[in-house]
Amino acid sequence: MNPSGNVAIVTGGGSGLGEATARALAAKGAKIAIADVGMERAEKVAADLGGIAVKCDVTSAGDGENAIETLKSRLGDPRILVNCAGIAIAVKTVGKDGPHPLDLYRKVIEINLIGSFNMIRLFATQAQELDPLDGGERGVIVNTASVAAFDGQIGQAAYSSSKGGIVGMTLPIARDLSRAGIRVCTIAPGIFKTPMMAGLPEDAQASLGQQVPFPPRLGEPSEYASLACHIVENQMLNGETIRLDGAIRMAP
Ligand code: NAD
Image 1 (cartoon, helix red, strand yellow):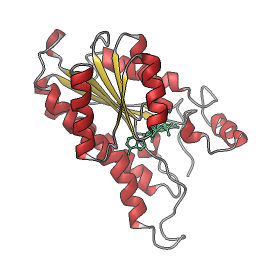
Image 2 (image 1 turned 180 degrees about the horizontal axis):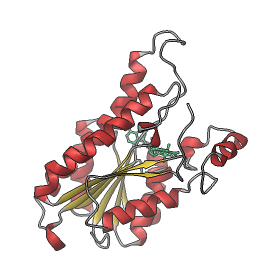
Image 3 (image 1 turned 90 degrees about the horizontal axis):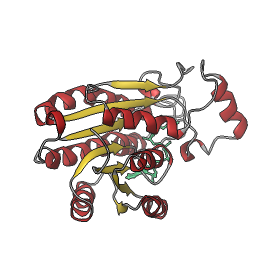
């Protein structure tokens, strides 16, 4: 799909990978709606791009419905959904630290996995009613997993489960939506230089970068954004999860 003139909703678009993707899609002529819980940054990004910001906790059915209704009336019918809202957690091992708190596990699954699913189901329901574009395409969805879906590290059971769930739902949802002409792909990023990583000291970030076979550095959000744009533009990409990680395989 050509982003130009089409409406894109970017969850978590107030920061990091979502912000970079919103900016890249806007540069290609898309109309941007940022859906985020953090409104200060979301409004700044939306204002820069001539788009809108909608307060939306992706875990809430009501917030999701409201976000889609609001942007439909203010920008037009969304045809592009980029799911970037997500959280990371501090290391919490199963066993050694005592029983892993269930509420922490539930929280990560709720935001990263159920939040993505919530936005997909609401987006798809309205997109399937739109007039088809070239080749019968009605919409495209880009999700964000992580290499943690494949190379789970110590203390990261909850995060890896949430990202593994996104990988797992990508193909079945792509198949569900194929008759409606809506594509679904997932990007599994390695380690990217975003505010999510800012908690790590500079030397820890540099040493993580050195573990990447090539290029030996952290990814730039613009590199995630260019793949997200490519997925939007390349009609043959569907049902796929693409690692974007410089070939890193995380040590335990
Ligand atoms: P970030 O912290 O910079 O941005 C995340 C955004 O999501 C923030 O704007 C935050 O307000 C928003 N958000 C959090 N919870 C939300 C909720 N319930 N509803 C709506 N918005 C919510 O992080 P980032 O690094 O840009 O990460 C974006 C996505 O990429 C996340 O899903 C993250 O797990 C994934 N990811 C990041 C990296 C990395 O190295 N940065 C690597 C792999 C995967």
